[in-house]
Image (tube, rainbow, N blue to C red):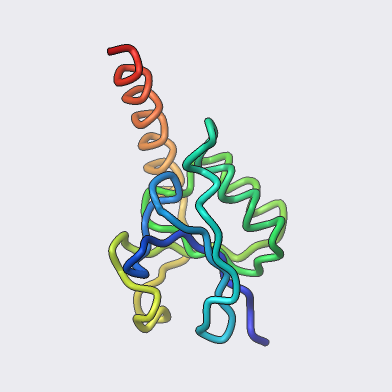
Length: 129
């Protein structure tokens, strides 16, 4: 089976956090088969927007950059039956993914949730000035 992988990347094909990456892509057989502007960049609920879009696009697997899987995003993907893996930001999609991805764990979800709250707070302060 050749799964459809959904992830968020930048121009240089490196993984980035769902809320910051420039593009959302689908990958099959090592090739990008779909690329669109990251919908999270224009959304209030950034990480969950990416998770929902991956489900809408029919992804079998999501590779999320460390810090991307807040609890709502994790729940959206789990309910849809999507396999979830984590990778360090900055790794390139053309690297040997089997060596760099890890299954998601509770610590990742907690860290990502705290990071999402921090980003929200920082947005409020930056818009208030």
